[in-house]
Length: 293
Length: 236
Image 1 (cartoon, helix red, strand yellow):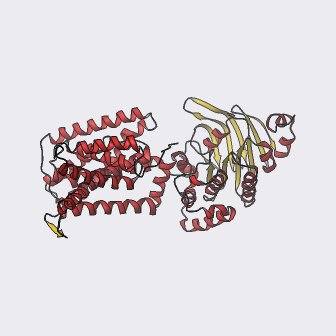
Image 2 (cartoon, each protein chain N blue to C red):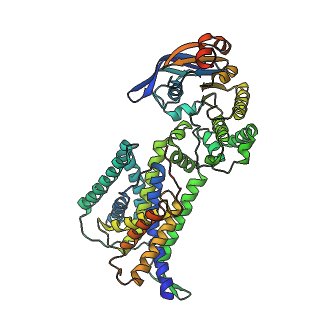
């Protein structure tokens, strides 16, 4: 039983990382109808920036803050320069553009930082505490706390600020948003900036547990896609809860289902994506139909 | 000087030109109607005024040139646009929709006051203030669209087919409120296919045909005009 609880807790921790990246996917999908396949690679690039700063002697905390800021600006730049020109084009065109962005970012990172594995420093404290016989690492607790804090901040942004209201309005009805005086281009840029920031956060949280290399977010992206699909692609709440379910399913399946072990856990999100699309294509919390006028 | 002076306006989308060589003006405090069949360019004219169509020519609003300006800039000058199809934010609440109407206003403190005024005009909206706009009935949605426009405290309000899809009862109610709004000093430019209704309501009217102005006169003159009666009032 203790083992089971332990696995669930670990699953929620890793699921929080998937949830953060899934939130980034959802944020962009809600505001533009675009599924950004390059989200994971952008997160990888951000993580390399943090790594580079630390290598260059910048204290870890400062490096992380700078990385989030750079990622926000970088996300806005990507929207303005690469996505804006194809805005409103048919979905296949946009799909190809985001796949191209995937390859571009991946190659650029390889060109700048090489293709070797790197260790990434832990931002969260080592060690653990025991609660009711379950050993909880500070890192796991920290990751969950960071995700919950991010959700709280996003909630405040979207529900309590004028900018958040404008962003929701621009997502709900861009044509009408312009007529009430909202600069829709600006809200889209901010949306991409926020998504890149969330991705960066997911990257630096998960990097210490994996090795940092140019492909390290590929797997995470698959899990995050599963999380967003399960939760409903237009639901932020769904992204987070979906992330947790995927994380727990991954750790439990890896431990209890013999043939999966630690090598085949990638089957779990793929099976879940397949199952959700078959049985409940809108996911747990998604709108039945996302109409984009 | 008129509040709005449009001169040699050409407007369209991409390579398609819908409105050609259109000249008209709207006096402050007037209710002006633009009549015309489907495709005559009525909606495009309003969209040109709001800066969301490709536009050439001259549009002077209170002396300021609007051609080439962004929609945000134009809204800030006090032009509210209640678009075709109402333009509500379906997933947002009624109250949020109203707050968005006042998005560019700097006097945030008085927005609550204006919301109360809108609820006074349309009590149904107050009952539904926390509901998503998409859950309202068609008539309520039109009321919300008009109320959203009012939240700007506009000097000029552009209304695109306010009677579209409404029952006669709702139509009367909406136009009654618009009458009150006009009497309080807001200038209205209304596009309508329902000429009977709007000639009753307007001071002055223009008739568009395939992107060109073909007639203009006081509402009484046009209501008495043989051609208008045949083409737009369904009478022979």
